Length: 108
View 1 (cartoon, rainbow, N blue to C red):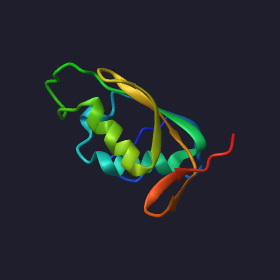
View 2: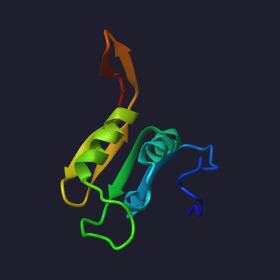
View 3: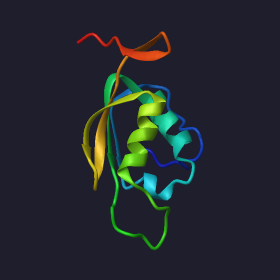
View 4: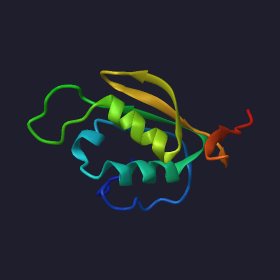
């Protein structure tokens, strides 16, 4: 378990095969920065599970699963499963760029 200000770079260097963020993103204003850190810390072929609280919170920032899915796709994750109310599962795969498009080159 890591206790750290998530709007700053996370002081870890080893990649992880599973990263779980439960009720985190609704309290983070700079979500792209955190998504990039999660990408950096996720091993190739590793999974990320993102869960949000769909209720209106007294504290925090409004959030929708769709906007987080778009963000994680832009950062480089492949979305494996989405629940539009509660979250999603994504995988970090090896992507190469050919002709301006992403092509999946992950070998299982």
